[in-house]
Image (cartoon, rainbow, N blue to C red):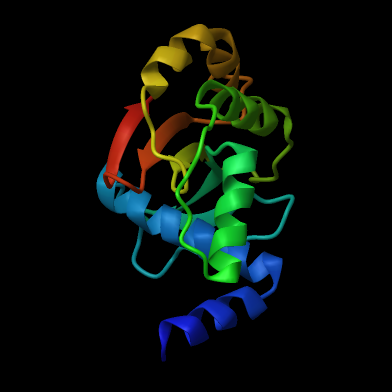
Amino acid sequence: MKPEEKRCSYFALSSKTKKELAERSAFLGFIEAAKVKVDPDSAANEEPLLPDISCKIEGAPYFFELGEITDENLAKDISTSLRDGIDGEGGFFSEEQPLIRIIRKKKSKTYQTNGAPMDLVLYYDKQFQIAPAEYLKLYKADIDACVTPDGAFSRIWIYSSWTKSILWQR
């Protein structure tokens, strides 16, 4: 299939399907980089109120909620460029605002896990990371509230699809 045909086929998919494909790709890259031993073929996209991905680790249910760290204007520009087949040159973007926005958004949601553990995986895909650890120090209270006995998440990870590496974990 020619690149133009692939692009048109992708943009003909529903928003839901594109979201699931992006989440699945980010998750597979993440588990490889983090060396999380997910049982083979157990990962599945889920519908809300469940977290984004369900799987099994050592036979036990486990969930992962994913969130892309990206400046919303940058994401819109990239999507438009890809849809229209135009080479984008990038542009200005915020690093701090998207990081804290996604942490606060995920912290405020309610998830059904039936007691199974859940990790939060934040990832860079469209936007290249510069210095997330610097900003994480500024928002320690928000992060700490996510990972407590009363918090929703067992762990929080930050993954880069650019470098295929874990940038930070708590």
